[in-house]
Length: 303
Image (cartoon, rainbow, N blue to C red):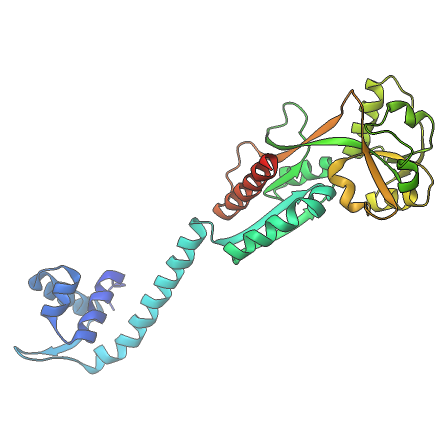
């Protein structure tokens, strides 16, 4: 073999083998018959063998042509399959997406979106990693996640942040205690009951500390918890009350022993949005999933 033939010439060879006709193959390929004959002749020269026995009436494969045909069929099939998979990848229909999220977003916002997306994009693998905000931004810098559902980054950190929802802070207490608290609740209630807080390094704790600063209140936590479920357990046991973003409530078991009340002014909330590295291009699959998150957020905002 003098050199590797082109796939286009091999496809023409395969078509002639299937139709047993140079004229029919030329018509199907939109070529002149002399051009097709030259292509097959050049292919035979490249391979150093005769591929067809032909006369004015018949075209038949030689033994060398018969040996080549299954190889060409396999090559053409593999090529078409590879480019079909690549087309699906470019269209966002195939691939892997690694999304980071705050625990509350991972538990409350994303599950339904992931389920809906998997129905329309069954060949896209979604990997969900929940973590605190600071860790999520580090994971993006380390290229461990494509994008994250989290709170805004610090200034000048090279991230793009698109808000998708406003997450107001609400008072959370045991249900019988909530029955005695007016709605909206006065901030003074936190000076009258033990306070259960998230740990100091969490974005929720930074938010609640800021809220108390706005109301000129000094609230010392009786308990500090790393997990929202722990906060819910302590509140349910009647050990205190807490202040949390509303999106975290499903993680506390609200609806059983726990209830919530909106707060009187000043209203305090956190912004939840989509964060990603500013100069990093997302894969088509990651962009498709990010658009799905953004689209669901718009639906929720309108409802």
